Image 1 (tube, rainbow, N blue to C red):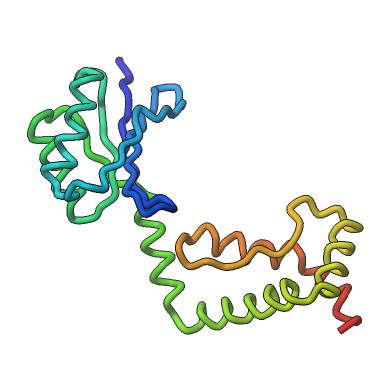
Image 2 (image 1 turned 180 degrees about the vertical axis):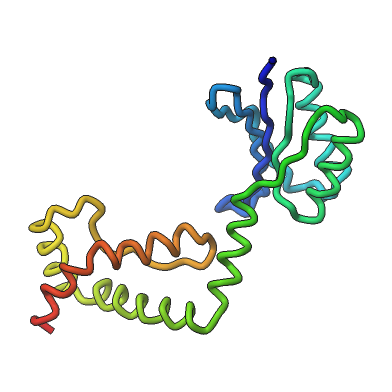
Length: 184
């Protein structure tokens, strides 16, 4: 049995608003390598264009060394997967699970209950952010309890992992927050 490479594509917008695409190879033993980073800002991100870019890489590596491509499930990428599969039917198109999880969590975070929790967490975080005395007490308390991942992390609705970090920081600091509440 021959295990072949997995190829993936991840796109994002840089701080300077450039549209960056990373073409990533995953080798059979799990190592990931960025094959190339491309600034595709001046191009229209239609399926034909993106599939051409992917096919250029598949041809450069040799199609017989690629077993699958991993893309999100946005409408354009569904078409891209189909176009690549039409040319190389042995390459399996796989949907990125992180994309689906991000969509799911984003929907969950839109519910009123989730919004209320976030607002309450942000009140706590902002209090410590703007109060030097409270922040100093919390920092000292965290230092005394030897919590490695110190401090409260702010919420940002761009990525669900940042939301998780915010919630987790409150949870990790819970005892310390209770210990210093007598001062306020």
